[in-house]
Image (spheres, rainbow, N blue to C red):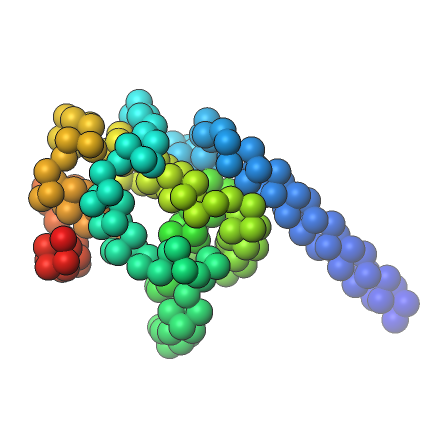
Length: 221
C-alpha cells in the first residue's frame, strides 16, 4: 500500500513539474514572439519530417500592410468573435464535444484563431485529447501575454495554405504571383475559403464546403 502511494506521489510530482516546464516554455516563447518572428514552427517541421513537404520561401508581411478587407474576411470566416473572446468559444466547444462523443472520435474542434495559432507555433496538428489539453493551456498563456493584433499577425503569416505553403503572403505569391496587397476581391475570397482544407484543395479548385464559405464571403464582402 505504501509503495503504491509512493508511486502515485512520484507520478503526480512528475506531472506537475512537466506542466511547469510546459507553461514556462510557452510563456517565454510568447514573450519572445510578441516581438520576434518564429524562425520555424512545429507545424512546418511536422509537415517536412512526416509528410516530406519542403516549404516554399516564406514572405512575412506586417498586419497593417495586409488589406483591411482581407483581414476582415479571415476573421469573419475563421473566428468572428476573435477580438471579443479570451481564446475560446465555449458554446462551440460544448457542441463539438457532444458531436465527438457521439461519433466516437475527434472530428470537430471548434477552434478559434487563438487555438489554431497555439497549435501552429507551439504544438502539432495531431487530433487527440492530449494535444487539445495542451492547446487549451497554451492558448490561455498566449492570450495573457500577446496582443490580439500580434496573434492575428502571426496567424496570417504562419497558418498552412497548401503543401509547404505557410502564410498569406507566401500563399498569394505562390498561387497568384503577387503580394496579397494586390489581390482582387475574388482572389482574396478564394484564398481564405480553403483555410480549413489547404492540403487537399487550392484556391482554383474549391471543395463543396469551401464553395459555401466563398458564397458567404461574397454575400458579406
